[in-house]
Image (cartoon, rainbow, N blue to C red; front, top):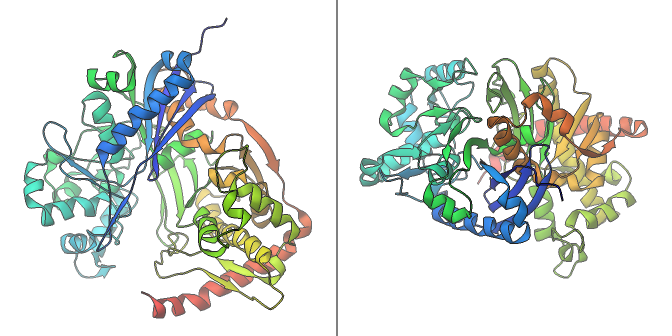
Length: 529
């Protein structure tokens, strides 16, 4: 019997919960375990999670993997994590959390951000002079909504002064997991990004900018040392080894936040090789050789897992969230779509149910158009006031038409973004990898191919993209594989080619879609609430 290949325990911590998988250097994913972790939504725009609940859940999923795949767990030589980004945890000198994790959804620090960084002239309450410096040094700027660590840390400083006084370090989600794994306090080049205090002009030498640190309002000694995503930051601490059921000799690689890890897990490590991640939200990302920012479209190239490259990231606010809304808010209580809303392939997923319906409706959804702006939009326009809408409904419209219109609306929104992506990359995208939970839908993949007019290559295991990315980052960091090897190891299960007969239909609909944005945006600003 052949020996089991060395494994990476790949941690995938999202907002919905803790997941983990066992990943080999060739990208094979063995085992999958998960535990839900609750999100607390608070008055005034607050959103928090308990870091200790993450750690408890990690121990549980590791135990699940050990029971299901004992030989593979015994073969683990590396641990590496991918996590949600933009969360903030204040920890004391012993590494204990002084606060819950202030989530990337938390907007309570927006006013604190404006007070710290205001000035005239201003954009969304932030000084134009400071914005220019952020763009030059970091490639981006703090979110005026207060949803990133730059605002979270100021919230703690101003509203929780006793906590701030006891804070030894402010850590992102990834940083806290690494602290628990190794006892070492570090930040990665991507986890520190949205504190907006780093000079990112040399991708292999991301460092703190003295000017940005002096201006940020946070004591310098509360910001952790910066490491590369592929750095080995230590071995498991005795407590972590016992918690995970692994030897203390297992090495820990720093890892990455989710969009960075997905770009690795999708196998798109070459220059200008884009992937589309289709989850609750969606993004288009590609590794590029130079730092660049498209301020108008909201697209930036930022530090990533590959030390001499940047990651172009263009994020759209809601993708699969539109399907969740459709399932939970529109279908009837006894609808068979609800019964299909499980992940088990044996019972059928929600996408299996959708895929039985969508082909019965012609391209163009019998004239119905849907705009998927349930939570505003971030790119190619940054407008929190936009909202979703069905248009051109008649007495002949049925629910199947509405369903196809939702799928097409998300694809049309991505086509809108792709104009800016093509400009950013310097050439039209001809082939696109697609991954994330939404890629499970054959119909949606075909709609994307037809609406975008590009070849769509589907990840053979799209739900595992972040875990696979963490596994590969861990494998690269410990010398098992190189980033240049990954495209050849990536597996696709199907290629969706554009249907030429549908081109004219979608070209016409896309022109109307753009017109709808121009006409409706002022209406939504008047209706904002």
